[in-house]
Length: 275
Image: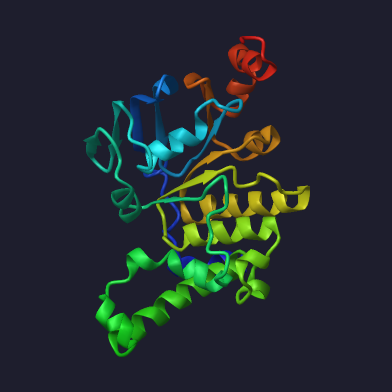
């Protein structure tokens, strides 16, 4: 497809069969508490290269907290994280970003007074090599570098079909388009692992269909590993390769969508039978 082809320069190549399925991130017995509340209790799972992994569960299950542990916003009290050949007690946000983990948020975190284009450009900051002196001069190497980053961002704008709002302040955009811009900013980082926190929350049916299409294309065309939180079970079962289920901070299931759908503990948790 034309949009996907236009973004090739700003995304990793599709995975080979040998690469697909390799473990790229592993969480071991993660425990996270706030005061007397245990948000995550001895949770372990792996993230495999090239998959779409959904983390689901009732409200308060610890899903967003788990994403915050993965990208270093929260530091677990116990457990370890294996990433890129290293085992560490906690992830550092700067290390995560520099090594290919990008994130969107449940509550949109954009610069509302800035245009769509400028918001996407903020996703390129870690890739800018010139120091602040060259950037202030905006001359020579710095100018060349910024033009290259703008070209990469324009390809993302084309890919996400948001050309008409490229100069519009994002605070003036409807909610669904703001969600798409936030996805674009994350893609501008050229991530290997993309964390999506309820990317379709608050969207109508048409907006959800569009977002599902973009998520699938990012995964299939570019080989980007995706970890997402989503409450729409139809979406989860349609696009996920594997599903991890949390309930009150405890992992109660981990498997394919069909396996999870048939799991009695999952059925009880969603129906409220177990509590």
